[in-house]
Length: 337
Ligand code: 4SX
Ligand code: FE2
Image 1 (spheres, rainbow, N blue to C red):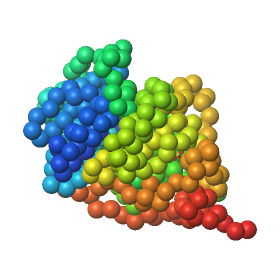
Image 2 (cartoon, rainbow, N blue to C red):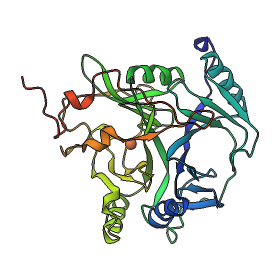
Image 3 (cartoon, helix red, strand yellow):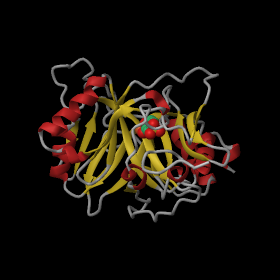
């Protein structure tokens, strides 16, 4: 059993792959508008990174027949952890594949798995190092994204997703819960609020990719740029202040509907006695600290994920009570008693 095997030592969430139906349009959004840095591009894919990033890419955008989320990439400590990942997932009964160095451009050997949630996950240890543009203020544009911070996944059973990631050695920073269940959970390997979070909903689907910017003004500035270009329909939620994580945020949708978050100002979680912050599902500040309503599409819409054969995974309906049927979000009434 995987219980008796050591999990791979995961450093952090590092990159994601999005399949888009029009690469030129996606390039206008991700590069021209948002200001992501292009490490490499060809006629079928873009390899993009933030200005602080050390590794080859934070995002692979590749063209395909149907919009979907491809693999989520976690960096592991060393090559030894690739073998650990392979053995760990095999013991969980998951399909795995080992890809020679360079199969995923810019990174070394990869262990790709179809994980117990149904998501495609890639583990890598080595990466090429492009120029780090941290202090090239002269080059910064758009949302001035520094790096990828987290994946948010819709899952039909949040407690089950929590158990699986706890087994991988992730810490729990915050939850939304009540006496009955956990509606959402935020979990980390690096010393921030999260590398991965779970939103209760039909799944597996990718809810969003979270990208870190250093300055609150970067969040506001991308909104202003979007307004000036009459692209306001790509702003889905915010800007606002999250209760969970304390982040100052905005959610955008790319031309294929993939959701991303630009945010700043979450906090350090590295102390061994770091407490879990548990929000009541009835607290109207939990998802927006100022009490602004969360729009229904944010809860219901998300990207399909691909399996190891590149086919979209079937989506299973929510197995637990929906947060929006119990929580106060402006568009649903809280329980009346
Ligand atoms: O909506 S929440 O305030 O719960 C929230 C959502 C907090 C942090 C996040 O990164 C997020 O996507
Ligand atoms: Fe997020």
